[in-house]
Length: 363
Ligand code: MEV
Image (tube, rainbow, N blue to C red):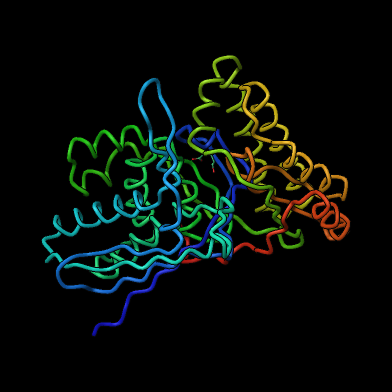
C-alpha cells in the first residue's frame, strides 16, 4: 500500500490590521502559531471520504434573514474541505491527469481536547492542508504562494468577505505582513469558468502582497483566551453595516499608518516602536467598535489588555474580537507573573503557544 501523505498547517493570530484588511490592498500583520491541523491523505478505490473527530462534533449553526434560514458555514469546516477538493480536482482535470479517489483524515490540534475552539483559524488551516495534500498526491508541484492562491479561491466561495490573511499565515508560518486581493473580481472569474492560467493572471491579485517580517528578538509573545466568540462573518457584516455612521476611509488610513509603522519597527528591531504600534492598533479597534456599535473589545478582552498594559506590556484583541483571544507583546522587565495571576482570577485562559517558525522560504 502507498504511504499516506501527511500535511500539517499551523493556526494563526492577528497582530494588527483587522477589519481594514478585508478591504483589498489594506495591510495587516499576522503570526502563525505552533499549534497545527493535520490532514492525512490515503488513496482509496471506489469513493473518497472525509473524516474528522472534531468536525464531526461541530454543530451546524443557523441564523435567520427575514423569513429564511442561513447556515453559518464558518462553523462548518467541511464546506472548506469540499471547496478545496473541488478546485484541486478542477486543476487536475485541466492538467489532463488521471482522476483517483482518496480519503482525508483531519486532526485539529488547534482546539482543546473537548473540541473547544480558540479562534486560531481552523478553517484556513484545513483549507491550506487539504490543497497541499492533494498537490502532493497528484504531483502538481504548487509553490506555497500558489497553494495559498488556490486556498483563497476555495475560500471566497464559502466566505466571500474573508481577507485570507489566515490562509497566508498558515501557508508561510512565522511573522508576515499581508494585503488581500480583490476577492470580488476573483469570484467573478471563477463564476465565469476561467481556466487556472486565467485565474492566476487575474487583475484581482494585484492588491495582494505577502512579505516576511522579522520577529521581535526580545519581546515575549503571550496569548489569553476569553471565551466563546461571536461569529467572525457576523461581526464583519455588523461593522460594515455600522460603518456608514462613521468616517470609514479615515479608519482605513489610520490603520494603514499603524500597520506600516509596526512592520517597519519589527524589521528595524525597534521594540519600543513595536509596542507603541500595538497599543495604537488596540485604540483603533476600540474606536471602530464604538463607532460601528459592535463589541469588538468585549469587557473580558478589555480586562486582558488593561492588566497587560498595567504590567508594562502592549496588548490588544486579535482577529474579529467579540471574545476569543487577546495577544500581548511584553518587554523583558514587564510583570508577566502578576499579569497571569490577574488573568487567572478573571477566568482568562493563558494559551501556552508560541509563534511557529517560518516555512518554505520567501513568500
Ligand atoms: C478575523 O480573524 C479578522 C478580520 O479582519 C476578518 C478577516 O480578515 O477576514 C475581522
